[in-house]
Image 1 (cartoon, one colour):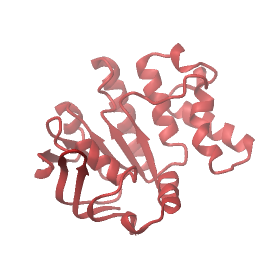
Image 2 (tube, helix red, strand yellow):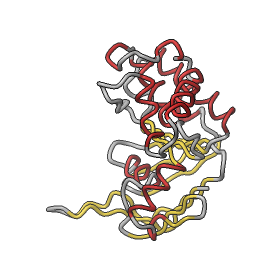
Image 3 (cartoon, one colour):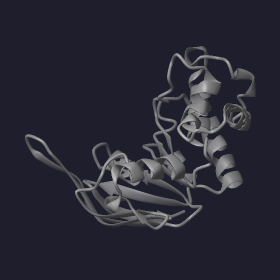
Length: 224
């Protein structure tokens, strides 16, 4: 499902900085994998490359058999739209849109009929237990509720891959536990391949596999 071969990423500013160096990583369909390591180890860069938000300096990244390095910008956008859902630490919800509208936003890009979009958005908000918050704005929600909306939006097209960058990092312990349970439940129900970047050892231990990065290299790859 996800395969990286000899992937490196170098940022070329005033000084060259190697964020990732010669990464080989293969993740089978339906697995839930955590990516851990100290700050600056390359975790978020790795997630951005897998998600097609950035391109590697060298090496190949394949998503469901497609080599992202060989795709045009339009085709890369298609892969992100159809195959990958993103969940970020700071939610990234549009403040002027209510819950239903935030979740529906990616579906408008697919040019679905309005009724179908609204039905799917409501279905997903019910799935994350926010069916009673459809018309609330993000500022009217708790941090945990906002993260649930972000997860519902990420799942809008039921993507086969879900990428989460510190999904509990901005939440208190109790709320973080609730979000982790939700991710576990969604993984069991939908069978998506899930990659979670985290500093939290408890989050990592909930995954069946943990990849450890240090200084842009994989230094450990263990199965729980």
